[in-house]
Amino acid sequence: MSNVMDLTTLATQLDQATLRQEAAAQLTGQVTLDLATAYRVQAEGIRLREQRGERRVGLKLGFTSRAKMQQMGVEHLIWGELTDAMQIEEGGELDLRELIHPRVEPEIYFITRKEINSPLSLAEAGSVLEGVGPALEIIDSRYRDFRFTLEDVVADNCSSAKFVVGALQSPQRAIDNLGVVMNFNGRALQVGSTAAILGHPLRALVQIASLLHQQERTLPAGSVILAGAATAAEALYPRLHVSVDISGFGRTAFHTRGEL
Image 1 (cartoon, rainbow, N blue to C red):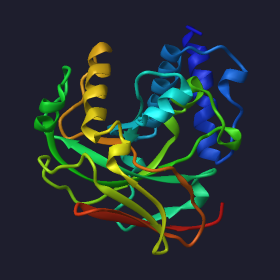
Image 2: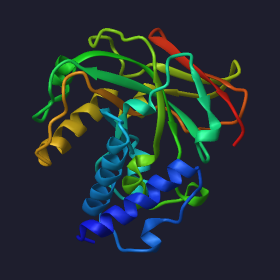
Image 3: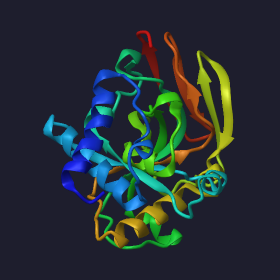
């Protein structure tokens, strides 16, 4: 799978699934993909978005729990790209008609204050941040039945769909073991801890800095980074008010409309 046209064809399948809100067959059922090629398909998919006027604003990180890494047979997290078209205003509305089978996860997010262009230690990680805050990520696999291999999900931009972020806090705030509660219409549906994100959310930042350096890539100042899920995801449905409360840290929310 080195032919550019082949990569474009695969990326277009996923892009059309997004635009039509119709689930597609797994790419690995059609071709043999390795992880490097899957990231090239992802990049081609982002290029298609940019052709429609979307702008990159950051990264989302996946497989940031040790259990998920072991399940998928990987030693490092994976990442997808975020664009401005994916962001929902805090307290805003998510139209489910734009999605296929969306789910939501509570997260921590970072905003970078300077370019990340080299590996970071855990002690250094906070120094590159403008701030941290609570977030909700809406994931929406373009594959049928939300089933995929590692290579499939990477090619699919790690199931990225939408996200909403709350107010920024100081990057010096302790975030290693904060209680996380995700609510649907005021009822707690998922309860967890920020420690589920690699034991400390800043470890996700350390890992992505190292992986980007290996790829000779930099992340600009002002970038959004979604650090990974603090609990399991929950399926979305109409007429929901979805919120996340992170103990002593903050909250953010959105609501849903439309039919799936």
